Image (cartoon, rainbow, N blue to C red):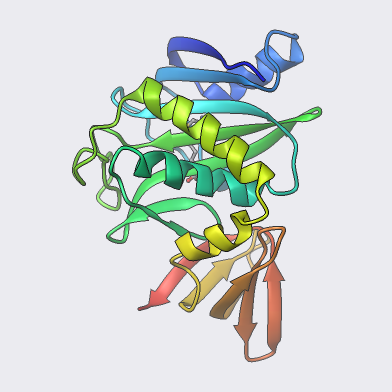
Length: 221
Ligand code: BTN
C-alpha cells in the first residue's frame, strides 16, 4: 500500500476533508489528509479539538479492521517513542504523559474504509489539561511522525502480540474508573482488562461490564 499525503494549509476538519475525498474517489486506504491548522477540529463525543498551527492534525484512511481500536493507539504510542516521547494510554486511545493529554484519536467510517483521525500537541499545549511533545523533550517532525504512524499501524494490525502490547501501554488497567456511556449511564469500578475488540472490562459491585465505547475517568491512583 503506497503512502499518499494530501497536505492542506487550513481546513475545518481533516476528517471531513478525508470523507469528501473518499466519497469522490480522490482518496483510498493508504492516503493521509494533513492540515497545518483546523478551524473545526473535533474529538470524540462531538467535542471540539483545539487545532492551532504547530500541532499534527491528520486523518489516515485505512482498511476497516476489527483490531483498529487497539492498533491505532498503540501505533501512535510507538511512533512517538521513536522520537523520544514516552506516552501511555488512557482507555480507549488518549495518549497521556504525567496525567496530561498529549494526543487523541477519533475513528469514523466511510464506506469500506476507516478514517483514523490523530491529533498530537507538538509545539504547544492548547489547554491546562494538555501537554506538548516539545515540553516532554521530544523533537518531533510532523512528516516523520506521519510515516512512523503508518509503519507502526501496519505492524500493529498484523501482529498477534498487539493486544498484549496495548495492555502494557494502558495506564487504565488496575485503576478505579468511572466510564460515562453515550446514553449518559455511568459505570464505576476497577478496570480489570481489555478484550480482543478493545472493550474495557470493568469489575463493578454488580459483576463485570464489557464497555465498547465511553468516556473514561481515572478516579484514584
Ligand atoms: C479525542 O481525543 O477526542 C480525539 C481527537 C482527535 C483529533 C483529530 S485532529 C485530526 C482529526 N480531525 C479532527 O477533526 N479530529 C481528528
